[in-house]
Length: 275
Image 1 (cartoon, rainbow, N blue to C red):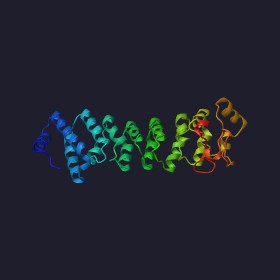
Image 2: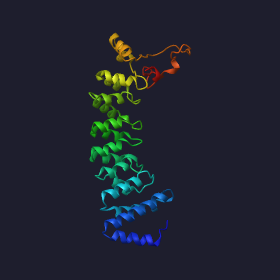
Image 3: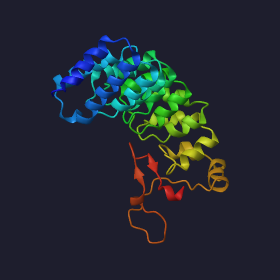
Image 4: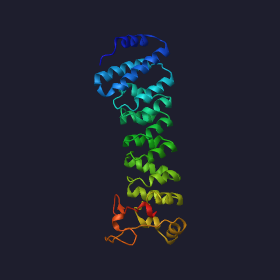
């Protein structure tokens, strides 16, 4: 990479110059130069851009930092130091695009931010394409209701056993959260039963309408004639239990091949059209 002599001179002038507008102008020009050619830069060249951008971004106003963050967030090989600086910016409009999107932040960096920054920062992290267990542990422990719900709804989030247990505990009394936690395919059998023990009628209905009620133990859900009547007659939900008939049916009802078991033979998900 060879920068034009004029740009080099402008960089030196801008870094030495205390004029914020001048520094902002050069900062965005340098950033655009990096973004346009980023796939072809070597690690050394990226490091050079990193140093320049960090120096230019010092004491720059929030609006310019926000523009910088939005331009760098989708770049897979964005400079690492400025990425971390932007991710930890107290202004959420600066930090949000980096926290929600940047691939340059590893789990360690995300955990550090999640442990020290605002709930808005945690919410941004919860909306990433994927989340590791050590990250979700902090989000579920420290996050407010909105953060925890967003994390539970994220299909790319992975949870530790302790994280899932805490997620179930936080679902107690929160029907919306319980409805999403209850249909997560990674929820273990014992925690599913714990969730059901305190689930409201609304939660059962929402789970049933989410592509079929996930029944890890059909007796635990139906249990009595009253529950069967409530599901079938009040809400039009047909309970589905294990099917032993292996033949393919021709009468419009579902055969065993249309039901799916998950995690154990007693975990049954009925096809969405029937719930």
